[in-house]
Amino acid sequence: MVRDKGDRNGSPTGLLRRPAGLGDEVYSAIYAQLMSLKIPPGGRITVENLVRELGVSQTPIREALSRLEAQGLVVKTHLIGYSAAPQMDRSGLEQLYDLRMLVEPFGAARAAEQMTDESIAALETIDQDMRRSRPEDARSAYSHFAQSDGAFHDMIAVGSGNNLIQDTLARLHTHVHLFRLYFHSRATTDANNEHARIIKAIKRRDAKGAEAAMRDHIERSRRRFMVFFTGEQS
Image 1 (tube, rainbow, N blue to C red):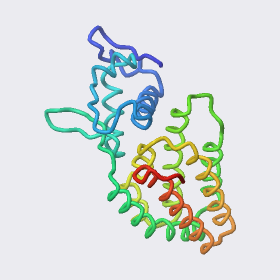
Image 2 (cartoon, rainbow, N blue to C red; image 1 turned 90 degrees about the vertical axis):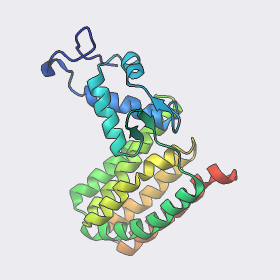
Image 3 (cartoon, one colour; image 1 turned 120 degrees about the vertical axis):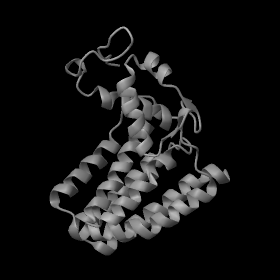
């Protein structure tokens, strides 16, 4: 971990001394702890502990926690402080997928019609990144996949040209809630294959095909993550 420059009290001594990218590095480190359940749902997050663990001052940590709060991963309570967001229950998961099924297939169809070639290329780049093998431990790689999965779906929402679709999906924090449910070793491979079918349809400008591929992806994802509550094998 890159350490920032600080005074004896752990406060930054000057903005110019702060390493470029430190905020993103701190954010990624805390994000990984939350997604891998090192910090469990509902668990208390102490800024002072993170200062000692990550070797940085409070400023980038508080900035990272604010970003994570906006994503639905962290909750800030008055006079108490920060904690990891509670886990989604079965009813919440069902409702999440019901809403996704209403919104995302339509968004994919519109993206197939309106997405620019440059945006499609960017979507493919995200997809390739999700497929790349990584040297980290399995849970760290899974956390990275979760971030990329969120970016993948968000880019399609943006490509739909419908601001309400993008805003709705952003507020759902879908990838955050799903990937924190439990470590699913097959989820990455299966999702990659389903993403490939979505991209293929969008590249063909096949609105109906993109809608069907997204609908299939969401339904399969529902079954994968519902295992957490049913104990069945997917």
